[in-house]
Length: 350
Ligand SMILES: *Cc1c(COP(=O)(O)O)cnc(C)c1O
Image 1 (tube, rainbow, N blue to C red):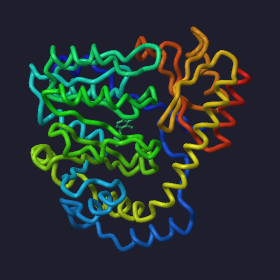
Image 2 (image 1 turned 60 degrees about the horizontal axis):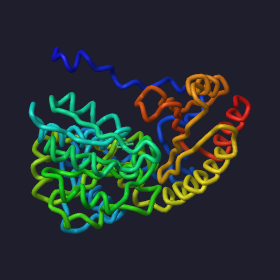
Image 3 (image 1 turned 180 degrees about the horizontal axis):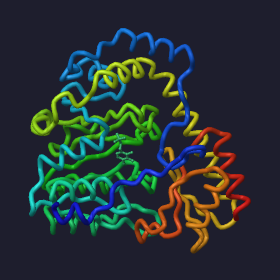
């Protein structure tokens, strides 16, 4: 085994059986019965004996429409956007090449850099509001000359958007590719999709996971055809299976259902934000995503996490994950009654 693999811990997914699941940024809503029936009928007529359409052309057409991908940009699909991060890293990796990101950020950037034998540098965000430390980031770009820079927009686990003027400077200064990871696009009106083509090193990554299709595993990269043609070479053939192609295309034809669900989640986010701010000792951070990062009284995050679990609510404890996340929990926005259970349990514990 390579030493850097032996040094890793596997990605841990906690057992959520019997718990209100507010740990993984899933959409809490399922589909109305009529839609489920229509979907089941479609699957009834979907054959599994042949390999899938290698270009997933029906699905790509639907994704272009749903996500307003500019016509002159190419699209590459992944088995989740995690697989796209992996394809990008595999294509640019080398022992003296750097994947750059900010911290606290999405942990898969660092892990995948390690899987692919790349260097990783994480530039700390500003401690007070998790905004970009532009001077530090520009310095890191100058020092490491990153082959690729990943920025989640909004950021996970902090929930904030970054300043667009600062991002423009970052994109201009980066000598390599800049990936804007818009996993939380359904929960904000901000996007870089319309910026594609204006900077020759910019690509945008999306996923259908957070909008309500996490079980399908489908992500996409949109960007200049010359870049995507290279990444396509490291894509394993048939990476998007027949059931995912059929189901995602079907779901996106019913976009209105998901739009209504994500609008409800956005409204609940505001309610939860305000209710958390009223609880003693809690400081919730502003969020443009479907989760809220909250700082709890010093030293109490592990006990609050366990106390919530005993009361049937699973959240994410980030205390210990990064120095800037000391005393922090991350709460996914759930259904109103789930959020009420969370708030009630927090009230008791505090
Ligand atoms: C959840 C998440 C992803 C992973 O999405 P999948 O498509 O489910 O693999 C990527 N980036 C960020 C920032 C995320 O939070």
